Image (tube, rainbow, N blue to C red; front, top):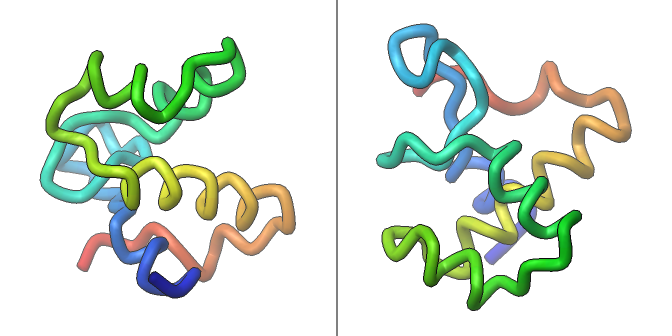
Length: 80
């Protein structure tokens, strides 16, 4: 999956999750995934906690974080 395809899995919609970045089709915040990984959870452990996640969703959260670190947020996250 390309970087752009991963970013399409992220949505920011004021009507969903208070406008926070989340995985499309879920109410799982990107920050929850990133916090879990920062605490040392593996992708498999995250998926145990959130069975609706697939590995591409976790990769999408990381891709989104990379975009933020580049200050390219304007390119991603608009509701589609």
